[in-house]
Amino acid sequence: MDGRLKDAESARLKDVVIGKDGTTCGLVNAKNSYGAYAGYEPFIATKLSTGKFFIVDIGEASGQVCRDRGL
Image (tube, rainbow, N blue to C red):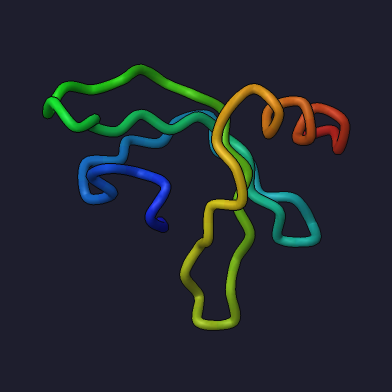
């Protein structure tokens, strides 16, 4: 995960789908600045050569990109 999340260690993922090109889509829920979970939001990520995932975007726009790609 990357710096887009206030507390990346708290991230909970669900409905994760990995496309043939490595594009990864799903829903993420993580703690906010107040220490409370903020609610699930769509995300799109890509797998780096290191094997780690980098979140490209979080929010409804990323959900639309995933839907357009059939993920």
